[in-house]
Length: 249
Image 1: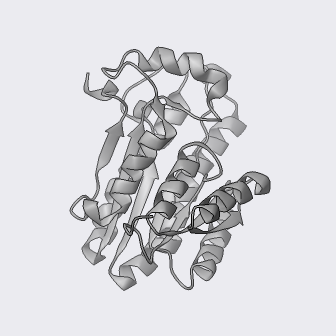
Image 2: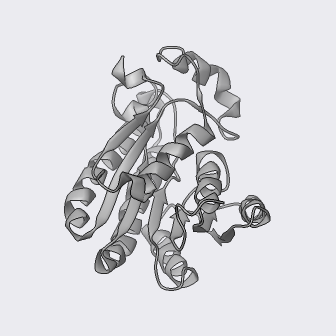
């Protein structure tokens, strides 16, 4: 294990699979005490077991992050479990309703905005002030490349993540002067357990990027880990595309 994150408490939402799981394993390997957040206890405990088997430290915190109250409760539990603080917050949990605008239901619109915008907003409001008091902290938001350009069928998903990108910059301006860095990564198509059913569509999207392929969860996690680490000490308010060059071409 490296010492990149030694002594830090890292809270990662949506950490029971995919990008979140890969990020949890990466930060734990760097010495962080990882708080694994997700809805499924079996998957959550499996991630915790994998981290502990590798010599790391982790705890599972169950949460169904759809409301402001659920976010506030999670923040309190995380601070308590972390011994009074959270040093790194990764807002990875998200929902991606796909379909024509005319077919999108009010419930689908509401849940996308709740999970992708409201919950990160509340978590930052609960956790960032403590970081600011201590004079140090890192927040990484996980967006999507379709927050940067229009794609048919992904209007509400892209719009919600575009809002998160703007929040990233606003939070950097708000908390940056007191030592808190807030950045975002915008992944391109990424192969995970959750996206297996749409792997063909992902490969088709990825073919338009210079890289010509979809990413692995670990490749996205590496970018998140960089932004969460002191290696990125002068990076604040950045929205980093991790999309194989798609938005650059």
